[in-house]
Length: 225
Image 1: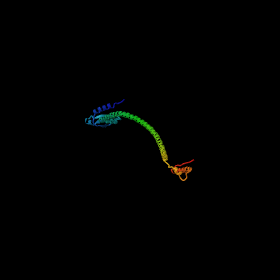
Image 2 (image 1 turned 180 degrees about the vertical axis):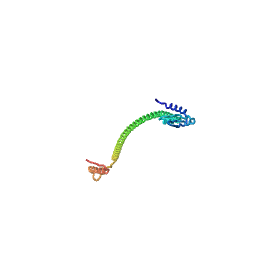
Image 3 (image 1 turned 90 degrees about the horizontal axis):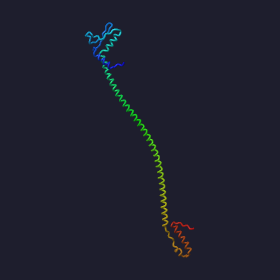
Image 4 (image 1 turned 60 degrees about the vertical axis):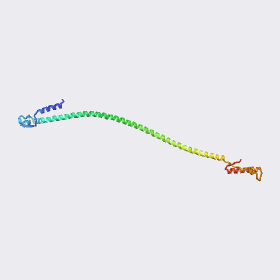
């Protein structure tokens, strides 16, 4: 059987308010004990409870302890703790709702954190792929730059060779032009053959010798079969 504490407390409070007030004191005699109200001693009917038997003292102590003042104090304490219990229960109920909401928020943030971690891992993978691509492109660019440098060097060499050929060609052209423009004054045959010796063959021979001398002086080689 469950006792309604609130109802019991109210009934004890009502009974205590009607009972004799004041201090309940001990009275005893030969084989008996009593619990009395100090406020009623002057009236002669101050005995509240009379006890006899082997448990007279214990019963008297119990009744004396259950005096109206103590009962009212106990009921007041019960009412206080009952009110406090109700407040605590209300707080617990409110906190329970708050905890439920907090748990939902934590759970939602946990899911969000998982999503952020997955997104971060995805970004890391993308960055790693980009890094590899950049490194590969960097190697290709470096090779291309090296090939370009080698090509430029070859072109420079070819240009120098072309310039050298052009200079040689120019020099040859100038040499040819100089040779083409060069004139040699040949000796006069008449002077040779009109001397003391008037021999035609001697004059021709002497003339050819003079021609060789003139050509050699001009820097022209002459070969005769």
